[in-house]
Structures are given as structure tokens and as C-alpha cells.
Length: 229
Image (cartoon, rainbow, N blue to C red; front, side, top):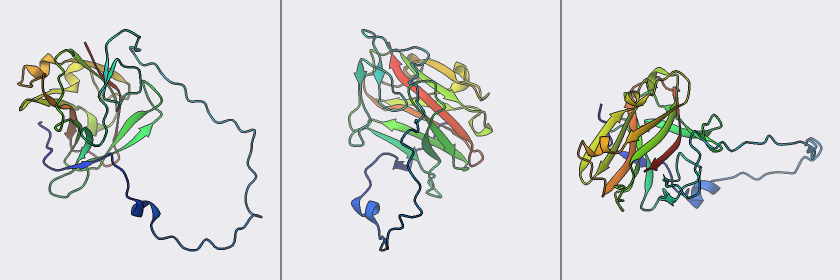
């Protein structure tokens, strides 16, 4: 299945001042008698940073998009919301976003993963877009990505790349992914995209992902996404 992305909405962006302020009623007189005492000796849980299946080592080569990945890298091309974006695609008929995203502490790397929640429509999809400033990825050899789900909506996931007018896509299941509730780390040679016509010297969409319809509330975790030689 080739993912649809005729209509897209920006997932990352600044809220307007008006939307933050809104209309607030008068707060009234404070009620200090009913407030609870703060426990100054309470210890907050410590979240351990996980190095991931293949921890970055100084001197090695790794490209991070600064999204879906928190580890070290030798080069970063971050999603900045100005010339490089993360989009959640919307259904062209209903206008509804095809999935929601939120952090999850169920992770394979770093402090959190990204949890995608299916909206219940006939398809879902999103991606990282560099159309404003296409990048040369020809010196990178592999896309690494970790996925986890046990929901039927995510029985398989399509992963795609675009560059120079060419589009290439692969199925996660062909690289070891199954929706069995466990983490699966996929290593996808970029030549698999190039062989379908993607110009790796001018990549406009380094990562697009999506799939078929499913039940609203079904979830997929994504983490540990980077490019390596």
C-alpha cells in the first residue's frame, strides 16, 4: 500500500498567545485551609537513560533527525518546524488526523519513545519532510528504526523515502518486524529505496510511515531512529 499524503497537518508548531491565555474567570478568594502539605522528602522516580541496542560511540558516524531518537550522533539535521517538519497526515475526506502521538516511557533507547495512537480511520500515516531543503544522504548506508506493537492495526508498517522525484517504500515485516508486543530493531539498506528511484543525493522526505485501517486506540511505539554508514 502506498501511503496517501495529499493533505497534511503540522504536528510540531508554536501555540498562539491567544490560545494559551483564553478567557479565564475571576479566581475568587484563596482557600488555604483545604490545601495539602507538600512532602519535601518525597523522592521522584529516577528515569534511566537507555543506551539502545547499538549505543553511539565517539568517533563513529551517525545521523540524527532529533526526532524519535535521543542518543548521540556525529551529525544532526533537526526537525525545526521552519524548513524541516514532522507531519501527521489527515484523511482528505474527513479532515481528521490519522493518528495521535504522545511520549511513552516504554522505550528501547533514551528516556521515552513516541506512541502513535490510531484514529480508527481507513489508513494512517505521517513523516519527516525536508522539501524546503533536500539533503544529500548518499554517504549513509542504512536506516535504523525500532518498532513495537501488539495491535492488529499495526500488523505491518510501510516505511518510505522520497528524493529527486523518486519514491521508494518497504514493508517493516520484510526486515524482521512482527506485532508481537516486543521491540524489533530493523536495519534497512538505503539502496532498497534507491533501487526504486529515490535520488539519495537530494532526499526530500527521509522517513515516511503508515499503514492500513484499524481500531481507534490501537498503538504503535517508535524509537531509536537514525541513519548509519
